[in-house]
Length: 139
Image (cartoon, rainbow, N blue to C red):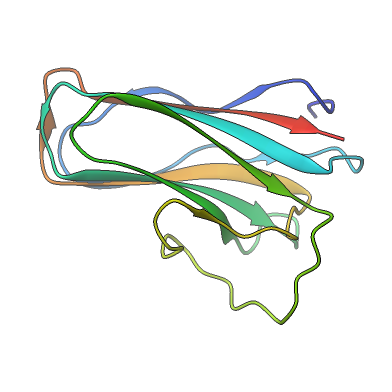
């Protein structure tokens, strides 16, 4: 189990080629976690259309997952950072989503007992296109 303020790799560097949906390993979060900062690194080679990285959390021990962050890339290398917070009130009930959260958005107020990254690529990438996703839980 990671400690607050200690980073975890959600998706080790992975080469992206044909269109695919790839789910990373789940990581248990310490109870004291107040939020999670995510760094997604996209190294563009050639081809392709889009890559969407979703941070997902589970509120039931990993049985069901819900999107809480979406970071998007296209055909330009980039590093993107996003943060979600647990202490933000959720004003209404939420319908859990799986890889359908709006591009470049977050859903504050939901940080369960574990997190994982899932990415969806469209189009055929080449030239050593890759993605890496790291996170730092904080409390």
